Image (cartoon, rainbow, N blue to C red; front, side, top):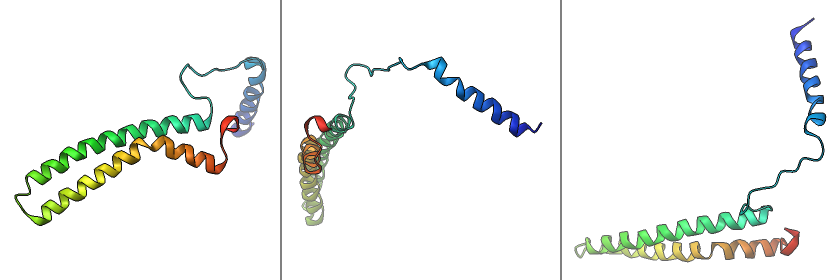
Length: 116
């Protein structure tokens, strides 16, 4: 017999044994603290990413302050430092409101309450 036919028969035979081996009564429960729905997972990811962005925004405020102090009166470098400060503050605001933004998007789409 051809090797491809033998391999196919063995594969199908092993595949047919899945149901008797694993059965119908096996349920897998997630560990405690792990979200069980996609919406809960999305909210948890948004919170974590938001905190990372807000932390980086705090670091960028320090960098903007250093840029401003080392500008030595140069208007271009002072402008760069001011832009960095504005972007850092915007990043902090967006990072801290990440979960609220995700909740608003879920509400607009229609994923609220138990439907999620």
